[in-house]
Image (cartoon, rainbow, N blue to C red):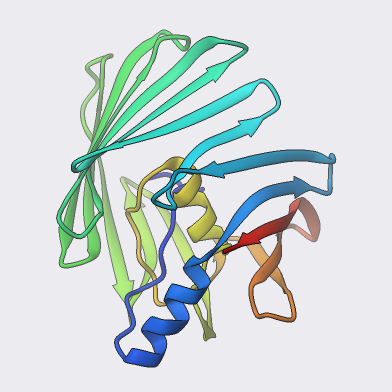
Length: 231
């Protein structure tokens, strides 16, 4: 996992009948579109009968998600041309333990990342590629239920959170992992920052996240507005 974790979703599991009821109610609402107000591009999302993401359409770029047993297969095409195929193997908690990605268009035939966990907290990742370079190892540090840093060699990425708000669908961590097709991180609080890149959120009257804005150096990098469909 690199500094930008377009990786995601699921907040930490919270015990209690009322909390579980709230979570089920929130799960009944699904993000069906994400419009980037900085360029007016719209991403369309559709779901299968089990409520899992099945397709993401970004212009000519189409990502398809197929689920089988403990695997998720993510296929990306652009105008009908295969861009990548990713197979994520999940453990019994639904976290990705091995991610194998084939990218024939880049000249690098494959990349494999093995994830190790301490309970539900990712502890270490080992990345190997078809090029045969030495394995790249990343270690992770947690505090109070939140991932706070990822260390790869001499490079450290730090992560911040809104400690007064719980993590929820639509925050940067959640939406990133949903779009990539598998989970690696389940954080307790609402995701706030990667190093100097800060994320702010708009909320609708129902409490759901309605927009996400990325700010770096005082400049807006992107701003997405969400549309939901609720059952």
